[in-house]
Amino acid sequence: MEAKRRKRQKTQTRKMQNFKRWLILLGAIVIVIAAVGCRNKVSSDKDDSNKGREYLLQLEQQDLDMVEAKIEDHHKKVDLETIESGDFKTIYEDTVFMGDSITENLVFNEIVDEYNVIANMGDTVRKAMNYISVLEGIQPKNLVMLYGMNDVILFEETAEWNSIDRFKEDYKALIQEIKNKLPNTNIYVQSPLPVTYKATATNSRLTNENLKRFREAVLQICEEEGVTYVDISVLAGEDSGLHEADGIHFKREFYDKWLGYLRGFMNK
Image 1: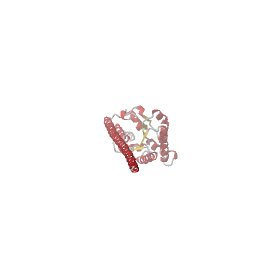
Image 2: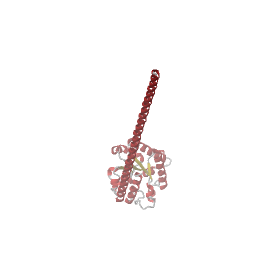
Image 3: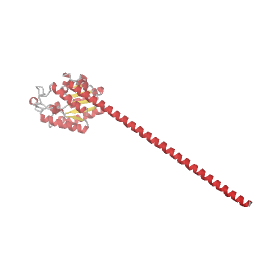
Image 4: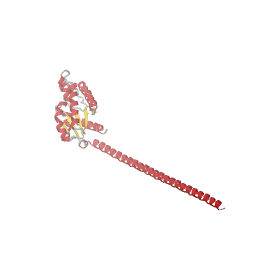
């Protein structure tokens, strides 16, 4: 009897130990599941937090873009109002104009300030090289050039030193030197302007046919050098009534049209 009792006791003890092991294992499984759940929740919360932050940043960027668009809009309106009022001294206060007597008249007509103009009667592309150091001292935001009229007067088809090819070489060298010395300056190169028959009567080379050839050369130069070409010849045709009596220079009305038109290229 005693032996049977002891055997039964051992069996019960073994069952109890197995039960405890199962309880411990079950507890461990519960703990692991709980830990994974917490981690997933933290990860989910973190993802939600990141998504929320990204959303707020998107909203902030949209607001910033909207503000910038409004500012840009405002500047355009201010520019338009300034152009309409003819206050070109304000519009072009950070711009330098280079050219010949046509450009020089911007000062004589008091359209822009004297320090904004580097131009003299008879100036050519080749002579413009002499003004690089002056430009370096000014460091303008924008540079607007208008050459070709006097270059055409000097033009000779068979003369190497003043042929169209030489004109192109000189103009490209000028632009390259300006780019090298003033890398942050925006360069705008304008087309030579048309003349009337009165100009041709005083100089046989000064014809609209020759000027057209030089205009095409200027366009090629701009394309090759990657600078902005501005065709202002469309503003003052031979029969526009905007030329002075000599058929070369222009009345005040032309300058208003010219500078208003030019501003549109600078806003691009």
